[in-house]
Image 1 (cartoon, rainbow, N blue to C red):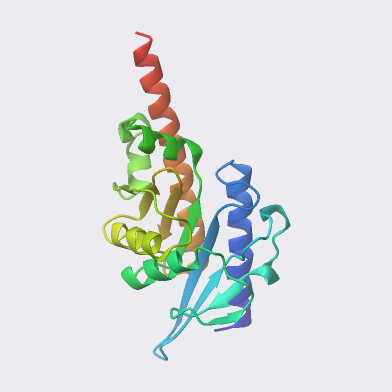
Image 2 (cartoon, rainbow, N blue to C red):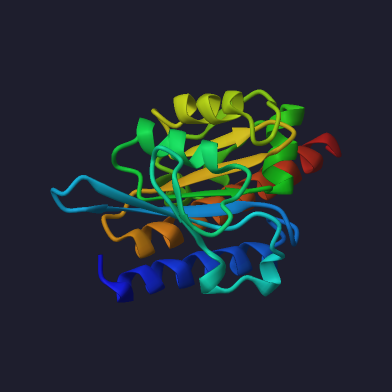
Length: 207
C-alpha cells in the first residue's frame, strides 16, 4: 500500500472524528472509527483505527493505530472497541469503514420506543441509510459480546443502534477514504431523522 493512501486514510479518520464532535454526536473521548485496506491478491489486510484515550480535538494522523484482522497491532494503541470493528469486517466483506458514535437523539429514540419515520425527511434520507437500521440490546462496552452482536446485526444493515449506548455505521465505497465519509453521512442522517421523529411525536402529543 502506498504511503500516500495510508496518510489519506489516517487524515480522513481524524477529520471524521472532528466532524462528529462538532455535530455533538460524540464527546471528546467518546466514539471510534476505522478503515480497512486489503492489499490486492496478497491477502495482507491493514485496519487503521482511532486510538484509545486521545481527545478528539487533539487527534493527529500519526495517532492512528494500525492492526490486522486477527488483532495483531503493527502500530499505536487501538481503541478499546477494536473487537467490534474487526468482527464487523469479518462479517461484512464489503465493509471499508466502520464508525461508532454516540448519537444522543437516535439512541434516545430507539431506547425509549419513539417510532423513526423516514418519510419526514424524504426519500434521500432513506437512500443514505440503505432503507435499513437495526437495533440491539445494551452490552458491556469493549466486550466480545457487543462486538459479535453488532457484527450479526450489520449482516443486514449498514447502521446499527446499540440501545443506551450509541450507533455504528458502515461505509462500503471501494475507496476507504470515501467509505469513511459515507459512514459519517449515515450517522448524521440518522440523527436528523431521530430529531424530526421526536419533534413530530411531541407536536402530536400537544394536539
